[in-house]
Length: 470
Image 1 (tube, helix red, strand yellow):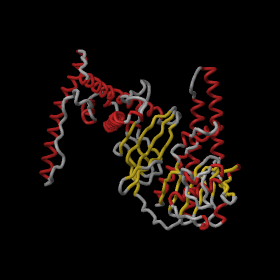
Image 2 (tube, rainbow, N blue to C red):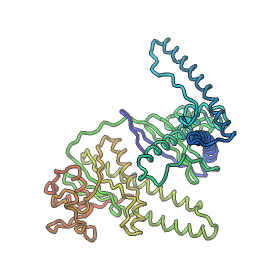
Image 3 (cartoon, one colour):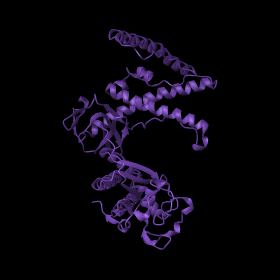
Image 4 (tube, one colour):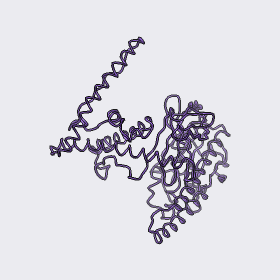
C-alpha cells in the first residue's frame, strides 16, 4: 500500500496480481494494448507540434507536408475556441438561474507556433475524441490515458527548465517523452464511475463482463489502475479513508536502526529489552534468488539465446512476493510492539545512500541492494497513520561510530569507526561492550532527542532479544 494525503483523508492502495491463467488476463492484454495505441497516437501529435514549432523558432524551413500538418492542427483551434465560448455561455446562464456568480473565466487558446509549442490536455482530448483509438476505450479511460501522457510532458518541460539552470545535474538534455513499444501495453485507469464498490467487491464495467474482484478496502473507492508487468498484471484499487487523529507525545519512544542480518533493531527509552528483527531469512531469499537467476540466465543464453524466460519471471515474482510479505510482517511487528507498550512515537534512521553503497564487498552489496529498506519505512509510515502513531524519519550519519553509553552526540568530532569491533559489538570509552546495532539505534534516537541519557536506560535496555518473522 502507498499513501497520499489531504486535509482529512489518506489515500491507500490495495494490490492484486493477475497471472496468465486468470480469467481477466486476456481482456487486460487487449485493453492495455488499446491504451498503448491511444497513448502513442496522442504522443505523436504532441511530438510533431513541438518539433515543428521548434523548427520555426530556429528559422528552419518546413516541408509542404509539415506546413499542411501544422495548419490542420491550427484549423481546429478556432473550432475548439468556439466550443469553449458556447460552453462558457451555458455555464454563465446556469449560474444566473441559480443566483450564483460564475467564478471561472473564459480561457481561449492561441495558434500553435514558435511561441506556443504544447497542445495541452484539453485541446488534445478535443482533437482525438472522435478518433478510433479514443473510442476503442471507455471515454473516461481514454481521458485518464491522455492525462497520464500530459503529466509526462509537463514533467519534461519542468526538466528542461531545471536543466537550463543546472546542467551539472544531468547527463544530457532531457529527451521528449518516448513512445511505448509497438507490441507493448500501457496502464489502464478506471474511475469510480467505471468501477463500482459493492459489498466487499469491486465490479468492473460491462466490457470486462462485470467481473467482480474481492476486496478488503474499508474506505471510499477512488479509481482502479491496471499496471502491465512482465507476464502478469497488477490491479491497484485506490481508495480513501478518514485520517486517524494523531496520538499526543507521551514522552515514550522507540528508535529503529535498519540493517542486513539485523533487519531492524528496535530500542526504547522506557527500560524494555530491545528487539532485533532477524534479517538473515531475507538475505537467504535474495541469495537463493540471485544464484538461481544466474543459473537460469546461463542456460537460456546458451540454449535459446534468450535474456529472460518464463521460468525467470516466475522466480522473480515468487521472490518479490516473499520480500513484500516479510516487510509487511516486520512493520506490523514494530507497530504492535509500540501499541502494546503505550509508545506513541517511532523514530527511524534513514540512509539515503543505501542503494549506492560502494565500499562493501560484492556479495554483501548484492544482498544490501536487494533488501527493501525504503519499502519498510513506507510501510511503517502508512501503518502509523492507520493507528495515529507519530513517526519521525531522521538521517543516521555518525550513529554507528559514536558512543551512546558515553553520552556522545552523533557528529563528526565524536566519530570513530574502530570502536565497532568483531561480532557486531561496540566498545565504549571505558571498555564496555554492547550490541553495535543497539548502540546505533540509541544514537538515532539521540538525533531527535539530544537530551536522552545513557544512565536513564537500565542495563536490561542494552541486551536485545532476537525475533524471527515467520
